[in-house]
Length: 161
Image 1 (cartoon, rainbow, N blue to C red):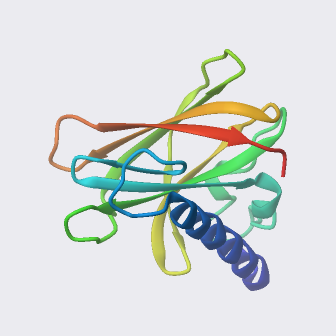
Image 2: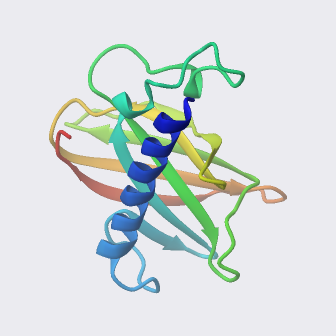
């Protein structure tokens, strides 16, 4: 990704994640907005238009981000920052899946790719948001060495960006 595009993407993504943390209020409450806490895991979500990631060229060493922006409808990039609630450290060894459902339709479940943004690890992938409205984002986080994943259900009010 060209340096300027990476910087712009990092700033926008960091802003989305910080906004989620800010609107969440106190870090101890679970289930508000784009923040969830379940057992020993905390997760923050960010949703940005896929156009922000289009500057990542397939000719670059790492290839296009997540295999490239999918065709068909308004695509958005979903990013999850996942933390150990006890230590506050980022979880960098999990399998994170997401499913975005809305308008009475169950969305596709996808494994999010680990990705480094501004030196920190997050998990991300592209999803279709057909238009403004209420969506459910179901995030499943399975840490290495565990048999069960932790499921978090995020209600999300989407506005076209």
